Length: 284
Image (tube, rainbow, N blue to C red; front, side, top):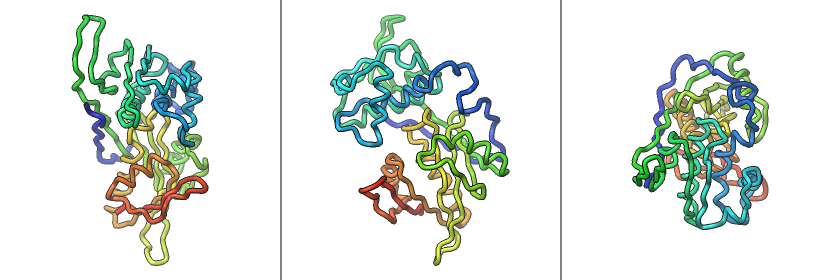
């Protein structure tokens, strides 16, 4: 049983590929679907939790209601999901399936989850222990491992920086403001635009060559599979290789948790308890 996907980082190229559609969901073949439908797979992974629900997971309750699932159903030991991924586009289906299976395997209550679907493209992303195909009435074990290839590009012009930030700004947890002086990087997952990261020069009294993480956003459709941490680490390593220090302060629980387990990050300030949890850390 595997619970991790391969995430290969491609060296930064000079020019990113053209983005075919605006991320505001105004166009494209799936524009008729509601936002709740398109993000259903990204949200439903949080439904395998018991009360009380942590503050950062309360959106799961709304997601369950939209999917017609009660919170009582979500606490059952055996959970069967019919028509899995039938209401989302295929890219969301794959990333969401990976996020869902990771959440189930990492949960403390060890729930049993059965996915019923007619879509073969999500099998490797779900990483099921077994597969029963009604096409030929065969039973088999899952072995193929999914692959996520991350491609990262630096954005040079102020016009392009504003263009990409406009696509991501509404998904930032804190603010939609942005300092145009920042160095900007964008990330693609399997050729799909998924992440934005910006860093600002922030010299300290005793250390001059310091950059601070300014804005990092991963689109909802690509969250909960470790892309944000991989992307942030790549940007940090970029500055380290250029003789800079790199500092980051975040209130994102998943990013805090990932960095606490990553030896490359050193915590300088403990998470706050009375307000939003935050953590200042330095990348070595």
